[in-house]
Amino acid sequence: MKKFFTSEAVSEGHPDKLCDQISDAILDACLTQDPYSRVACEVFVTDNYMVIGGEITTKAVVDYEKTARKILKKVGYDDEEFGVHWKTMHIDVKINTQSPDIAMGVDGAEMGAGDQGIMFGYANSETKEYMPFAITIANDLMHLASKLRKNGAFKWAKPDMKSQVTLNYSKAHEPKIDTILMSVQHHPAYNQEEFKKFIKEEIMDVVATRHHLNTDFKVLINPTGKFTIGGPKGDTGLTGRKIIADTYGGYGHHGGGAFSGKDATKVDRSAAYYARYAAKNIVAAGLADTIEIQLSYAIGKAKPISIYFDTFHTNHVADELIMNALENEFDFSVSHMLNALELRKPVFLKTATYGHFGKDHLRWEETDKVEQLKLYLDKKLSSPSNY
Image (cartoon, rainbow, N blue to C red; front, side):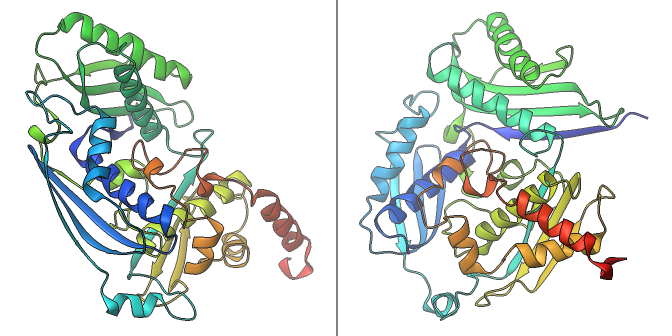
């Protein structure tokens, strides 16, 4: 039986990702001056107009408009005819301070969650990053395409791009690429044949080969025929709308909370990162080949209301031992998550493009609990009470 799975990713020039980057750049700017900044920053962009809104309580002095224009320039928005220009975009700033009702719960003797909600962490053994294959490939396509556009090798390409990867899992442990779809904004005066040839040979094939996968997949490039009007001129953007591309590409569940623009007292972000940290270490330690962890929190409360996990029948030890490991080797309290993952540092702009997980320069991607988990497991298995 044929079995397919598809994930998509977007480039840094996609309108939603543009908003994510500006929200996180503002967060980082606040944290650089004041590590205890409280930030919930949302960005909306359409055509040549942007609104920066939200609630920020900080001692930092930040020029929000200047920060936004810096991101616009970095991404490559310098063409008013077919997109927008970083110099001339109209930007309104509507920033308020955080509600004292929320601050009251977060600022207690034992730091409480900044909101209620559910969060998920996931890891599997498909890739060396312990990430699902499809989203890893989709993000790599976008990263490479954007890199080649910026260094001039990818002629005619503009910032706005999307990728979609369909894998064939008919042989569960031997996935093959069935289809790669890429939509890439381009200058109208382009050579279509040369453009598509470059995408297939210098982007798609390179990424597929890098992951030791086939290159005889079906190819779709700009299926409507052309893609000249892009970015905010062609589509409205909003912070937090790419939550599946930001995480695991549709594998497992999602709690619904977005990440970008939120400081880590918001458990939408910190608990999702810590759940990923726990899941990755569990898989790396060999307790299971796949695990999904769910956490739930109440506003103002320090510890989760519940911890749940599912190994999808890939566990190598009893479920009880995995739960014991989660409860004894990981601390899901808000203050611990912030400290352990160093989430008061300005690290968030790095997460705003090409996914929040699977990157080796992020603290929650470290597998420093592996040996500790193995020792814990050995101790538990050698105890007479477990026989």
